[in-house]
Structure formats: C-alpha cells, structure tokens
Amino acid sequence: MLRGLALLILCLLSVGLPAEAQQYRRLVNFEWEPIEGAQIYELELQQTKKDGKTYAFKVKQAAWNGRLSPGEYNMRLRSIDSRGVAGEWGDPSPFQVNLESARLVSPEPKAAITAKGAQETDVTFRWEAVGGAENYLFELQTEDGSFKKQEDLKEPTITVRLPVAKNFSWKVTAAGADGARSEATSLGEFSLLGPKLGTPEFERPENEFVRDLKWSKPENTESFDVALTRFNPESKKWEKVQLIEDIRDNSLPFDAQWPGGRYKAQVKAKGQMRGTSSVGSVDFKVRGGSRTPAAEFTAEVRKSIDRVNGWYGIASYLVTQIQYASRDWDPVGGVQTSYKAVGGTGRVGLGYFRPETSWGFLGIADMSGFLNEENKNVTSVSGELNAVWRAPLGERGELRSPLGLYYKEHQVARGNAATQKVDSYENVTVVGPHVGAEYWYSFTPKIGFQVNAHLYMSLMKMKTPNGQSIEPTLSTQFGFLGSYRFNKRFTGLAGYARREDKVRYKSTTTDTQVSDPVNEATVQGDYLNFFAEYNF
Image (tube, rainbow, N blue to C red; front, side, top):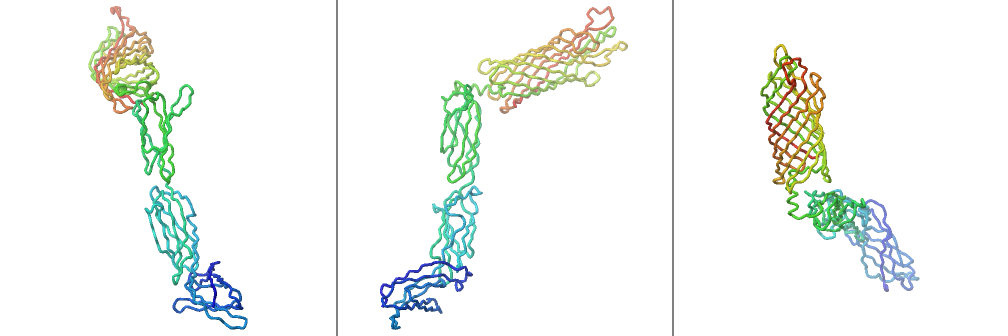
C-alpha cells in the first residue's frame, strides 16, 4: 500500500528541560515519499518500552515534526484518500530518538597545555550538560596508547592526573533512560607539554689543557644545542668556532688544532614536547702551543708553586726562643743587657700577579714581640711594599725577587745611670730598602719547596729615643719552607727561618772614655715558620 516509504530522522534542536528523560523532549522531523491520491496521512508512533505510550497524528503533507522523549519507537503510516477511505497500515519501522552530542568545553580542540609538573600534572575536563542525560561515559588515552582511562560520571566534569609530554584524545558519550545515548560521540584532542627543562651546568675545565667540555644533563633532556666561540684579541669580537644541534651526549671533544685563547661555550637542553632550557655558559682559557700530555704534566706539576690568579693574600707566624742583646751608652758608663726570651712575629700581606707579565707587587704588615727579662711583653710593628719579579727556572722551578722599601720599629733597652740597669724599652724607627730572593720548586702538583733570603738595610731615621741619627745597619732573614697545595686557591707552608734584626744609633754620652759611643740592639732567633697563601 505504501510505496517506497523513506524515513529520515533529523534532530533539529533540544529543549533545556531537567535531565529526567520523561521531561525532556527533542524536536524530531519525519519525511516520506508522497503517496498518489493521498489527501491525509495518518501517523502512529509507539514507544517500544513496557507500558510505552502510543501517539497518533494526522497530517496533510508527507512530513511530520514534533517533540519526542529519547528512546526506541515503532512508526507506522497509512494514507486516506479523498473519499475518506483509509488504506492499509504499513509495516512498523523502528527508530531511535537519541540524546544530543556533548559539546566539549575544556581542553579546547588542539590545545597545547603547558604542565606545571615535570612528570605528571592535573588536567580538568569539562563539557556542557546534555538534556536527558543521566550519566556520561568518559574515555581518555594517549596517542601511543601508554595511558588509558575510562569513567562513568554523573557530572559533566572530571580531573585526571596525566603523564607529561604526551598527545591525548578524549571522548564523551551521554547516556539516558531506556538506553538512549548521544547520537554521536564527542571527540577532542590536545597536547600536554612539559615545563621548561633545567639549565645545564658546565664542568669548568681543570686547567688550560682542554680536551673536552662536559656539562650536566637535566632530567627529561633528550638532546642539546651547543655553540663554541673564541674571543679574537685583534678584532675584539667573539667569533664562532663550532655550532652543533641535537647532540645526544652531554660532552663535546675540544679539537687539539684549535688555537689557544679565551673561549666561551653555551648549551641548551631540549626534550620532546618540553620547553627548551635557558642557556648555560662557561668562559675558559685554553693554552696556546703544545697541549700534549707531557706539556700538561709539566704544567700540572708546577701548580704547587703557581700564583697566577690575580690577587692573593698571605699570612704567617714565626715563633721561637730568641736571643736579645743591647748596649746603651747614653748613661755614663753605659748599660748592657743580654738574655733569652720567647718571641714571635705575626704577618699578613696582600699581593697581585698577572699571568701575562713577570711583575707583581706585595704589601706586608707584621707585628713582633717578646717577653723581656721582667716577663713583660715588648712589641713593635713593621711593614713592606715591594715590587716582585719572577722568572721560570727549568720546567719545575721559579725565581722570585721582591724589591722595595720597609719600615720597622726596633725595641731598644734604655739604661739608668744610677742603677746601671735597664730602665725601660723604647722604639727606634727606621726606613730603608729591602731586597730578597726566593727559589720555588715543584715536586708534584701538590707538594713544593722554597728557599729564601731577605736583606733589610736601615738607612733613614724616623725616630730615636735620644734624637740622634742612625748608622746604616743590615738585618737578615734566611729560611726554607715545604709547601702543600690544598686546592687551586689555598696553599699551606711550614719550615725554618733564621732571622736577625739589628739597629744602631749614635749616643749622647759625655763619657770621654768611650771611643765609639753607638747604641745598638739585636734580636736573633731560629724560628719555626708557618705560612699560608690564598688566591682570591
């Protein structure tokens, strides 16, 4: 009776009613091929569920639209001609009224999300609520299938902890009463990017014999970009030496043919779907000329005596039992004294050497003291300011020669004419030239040896107790030290020093029996010498 009945169900729009299926209706449109001679069409829609309702409609056109609850239905159709005679009912045709598809809100389609955590991070998924839906099937997986998750949810949202640096796809299917489901599954895709990688840190080359460059490998790093430049002293510009991208190792060989000089290396860490790191860099110097293992060994051995890092400080202490002797002719008849005492000298200094030159300087201040025959402390201060010249002697030795001026206070015993004994101690202050020589020798990169000699000539009076002029007098110091280099900045030394401090100045005596009325004082000692040197 019905020829070529075609059924097309078009879901046109949904109504924002509460989620219960019986209150939710969708606008549904039916169209079929017109039947010749039909004046009216009688349409019957019956829910297939138990106690389902049956809806009957009459329409003049070969189409019908109206609102139906989601679920399964059977539809049958017959025509009525102009006489009012109804034809036979057609065979029932089943159809399904589905829920609307969920509209995904977050993450947005094709979004690239930067994670907070390096390994995992929480991501919140949201979609708009679907009318008539009682629950939602949420499905999530990575592109490579390494992570999968499936949940049945009542609410249109879920937060999931996800692995970082992956591509994801996610699906949402709404489900309602009587088996109603979304007419289509909603699909979304996004990328979860890892945060910025940590900055690689270079291992600073131990010396100027650079054979390779090494740096740390931050977590999750897969490759590095490395740039190496050299400073051209003529053009005063940095020039590219080598640029390498996407290397897997965290090291780079340093070509022995590259010239010496000042270099800069820079490196960036990269990882799949992770932020590129900040640039790590290091400046370093490379030795010119031969960089063979033999040359490196020699240079390494010299380290125990090298002092090439610019500013350095020294501190030393000499302690021993000294021999003190003095003669004071100012009282008539003169007063002499001689005794042994415990004495010591503390010394600090600041110096500077540049690697490019043979010259530097060294300033020293010290304080000396001893216990006199009455066990009272007698102290004096002194200072030096020297230019220092150095020159290598052989592969392991070095000669250093300080030359400058010194200032020194000498403690002299003053006699009492009545008692013919020492009455007090006063300063004689002198200034004069200082010259010295030191020979340093390296046994190993840690252990070295030094012998030294220093001469001090008092030429100019600054102060004498009686106001008289001084006579030129030579003071001396000789010694040797063993050295141990604890690290590239600190060297400790210990050894022996033989020291003699002497001063002479004219007397004011009226005693005509004295043929050479010159007052003098001498301090002699064999000192145990402790010495420390620190490069800043």
